[in-house]
Each structure stands twice: as structure tokens, then as C-alpha cells.
Image 1 (cartoon, rainbow over the protein chains, first blue to last red):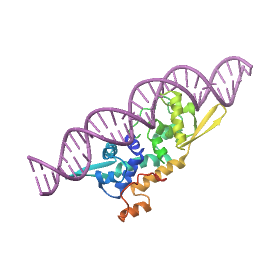
Image 2 (cartoon, chains in turn cyan, blue, orange, brown; image 1 turned 45 degrees about the vertical axis):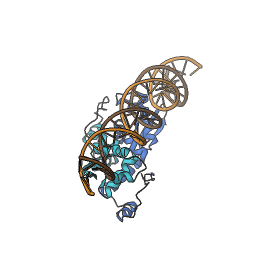
Image 3 (spheres, each protein chain N blue to C red; image 1 turned 180 degrees about the vertical axis):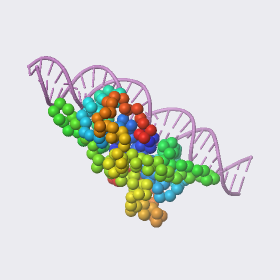
Image 4 (cartoon, chains in turn red, purple, green, blue; image 1 turned 180 degrees about the horizontal axis):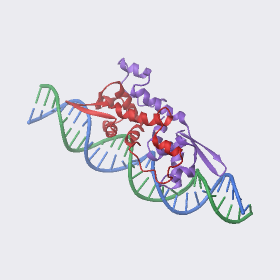
Length: 112
Length: 112
DNA sequence: TATATATTTAGATAATTACCTAAATATCGA
DNA sequence: TCGATATTTAGGTAATTATCTAAATATATA
């Protein structure tokens, strides 16, 4: 989840996601949209891949990138929970009971 | 929007948001949840404030922080649009028509 | 007014990130 | 196999970020 948010924290990468939302594209096609060197775009694509937000598949000479909407939906779920649109979590309920210990909860849980 | 995503790209800050989702808290109360110096937490709170994700209000000796769910909902909207749950944008429609120019769209629009 | 508490600001440093150019790798087609 | 095309990897640098301690600011209370 942290990787997803980190990957989304860059405007170039968010624009790449929007481009892949429309259709699958090759690395070169994606790079053509930006005023940036191809290696830099490759770096961004790798960040998105590492976050599992996109997948790649070699097609002969080209490498085709596609969006993995599942991970986007996970991020969406995190936000939905927070904006109150989603259901309340167990953790939240406990805290509202006032029983939660007040130290050292900064260890990252899987969910976040 | 970029500031929002950048602010959300840190686990400490996301945890702070979760804490404020439950109830308003003072800077000191928030800091007590983490193994981190108070100045560092202050820095994170400032990042959240700069992204307009939280608001602060002095209450005598204390400074009370609260969540601004409006901005979270904007981020939510961005993601909803991408996961296909939301309505399609004009930009996307144009692109699907195949008329979009293929250079220099990396200038950040307000929406992103 | 003096002291204690709550919080931020300042200043320094280490780690991370984004970008570039050059070089390496993989595939295609003659 | 050779030359062209597509893409990534390597290596370097500049900018940003996260963290700390020490100092400054604001408020409360004795």
C-alpha cells in the first residue's frame, strides 16, 4: 500500500496511469507524451510496476504496458474507509471505546 | 492535488489521518502515538496542513488538529474516475476519438 | 513576573528521488 | 549476421525529504 501511494505521488506517473486507463501502450508511446528522456520514463514505469499498478509484457521489439486496476481499487478502498463512505473498521471501533494503547502504533500494518 | 498525493505518500502521515478520522487531537496527543520526536511530527502535520488535508486551531496552550475530509474526497474522486466507477471525462473522450496531440501534455492541469 | 508546558522554527545531516547522458540488451528485418 | 529500433540499466548530480537536537514562541499558572 505504501508503494502504491508513493507511486501515485508523482504527476508524471499519475498521467501515465491516465494514459493507460484509455488503452494499453508501449513504453515508447508513453514516453512520446512527455518532455522527458526515455530512461526517465522507464524509471517511472518501473516505479509503477514495483507498486503493482501496471504490468508489462514484451511484444516482439516493444514492451506493452497495461493498468492493474485492482491495486488502484485498494487505494480507493483505503480512502473510502476514511471519508466515511465505507464501513467502520475494527481498529476504529476499539479506539472509540477508548481502550487503545497510546504508544508505538507506528509499525505499519499490512492494510497501510 | 499534487500536494495531497505527496502528503498521503508517507505512512506516518496516513496514520495521523486515521487518528484524526476518529476525533480531533492536539499535536502532543498525536505525537504520543509515534516513536518520533515532536518536531518531526510537527513537520508531518505541517505537510498535511499545506496539502489542506488537516486544519489546526489554537486552544489556549494547545493546538487542536482536525481532518478536512473535503480534500480527501477530491483524491477519492480522482481515483474513482480512473477505476471506471466515476463518469468519463471530456479529455478521455477526446483521446478515445484519437484526436489528441501526442506531445507535451505533461503540463499539469488543475485537476491533476 | 517567573516558571512550566505545548508547540514550532532553525539548522544540520543522511537518505531518497528525479533527472540526465552513455552504454548495454533484446528483437526485428535485410 | 549486421544494422536499426525499442527499451532498460548504469552512473552521476542536483533537489527534496525525513529526521534529529537546540532554540524560540505562545500560553497558563503560581
